[in-house]
Image (cartoon, rainbow, N blue to C red; front, top):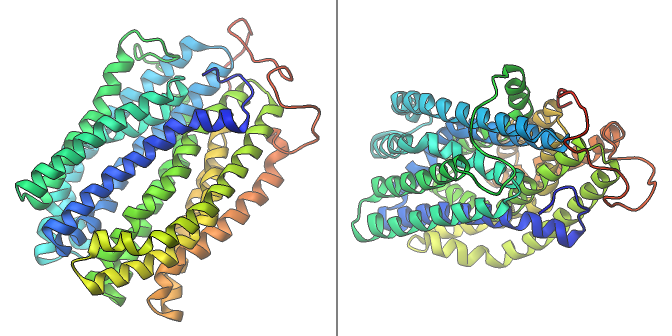
Length: 468
């Protein structure tokens, strides 16, 4: 799909649908891991996986940074009509991501045990956490590439590529979960190896696809030797990395508070809430991932009218979707809790209560996500990173530490509501105050459309600027 065209609501949804579907399916096959571990290996194994997972996600966050920051850099470069340079930037980002993934996998395997102990694991939970984490280090480089390629698929004008690869990886993971965990009874180790195979599929298949001649806007080849451009991409994408790190750090704090106020059942219940909520928030994540390259392209083409159109339509879609998600989550709370914890009545009731409270945040969480994605697409990584850190490390950490002391365990589940509501209001204020700088707020001079501002072509003489 031509990224220079005018995007109506229908066209915008059509362009972002593959990314949304991709993120939903990624969440679903992640849920299958938890479902099988919980029902076939027990709640101790389930709690062990949830305890160590935030650390594994922290190691993989560089893939988020490279994908989002690199996508903005490449889209901006293409918007200025410099396709060959965009290919070289793309190749540079991919090779750096792969090399960093290998190094982080080695470090992660070495420190897995002391980290698990620091997170509060002991006895059987400690051994299961270390086993699961070390096995997943085998595929960490591919995991990082998978997230980077998910962002680049839309940038390459092939958003369905990411969906197809994710479907293949997800089917592999679910099939192997059934075999390793359900049939062979391999428990945590079986779930880990199923995840390893799926991540290898998700990271290596697109690597091979982009390396061959293909009818897309990007091709893997000779990288650019441009440390300054790499640095700009890293700074700009730091918001997405910060968001991922923040979520993991918040998960760690949640687990520590739950162990303190409720115990092991609290960690297991939180795991279920997070697995299920991933499906709902995946809709927002997929939309932001799919729409960001469009904003970056129009920013590079200096088409302010189309940028305003994209932002307004995006905020409307996110707001309406959030309301529907909140209602659906209330209706599905009991059956979802039963699927994960029906074998334990107390755990099931705790999970259902937690999810009913937690899901009220869906009304505002999408706006906060979109705000961070918007400023990344516009090249302002500092504002984007501040938003990402403020939502989680700032607001949510303060809430989860303070509210339980005031209103008890229910305060743990309510923390995200307070944090996301404040974050959404901050995003709207930032759009209002910083919008004129980027052409997002201003007098409307005509109807949005490709005729209102010419898209720069390869014939347009330009000099590659910083992305701010």
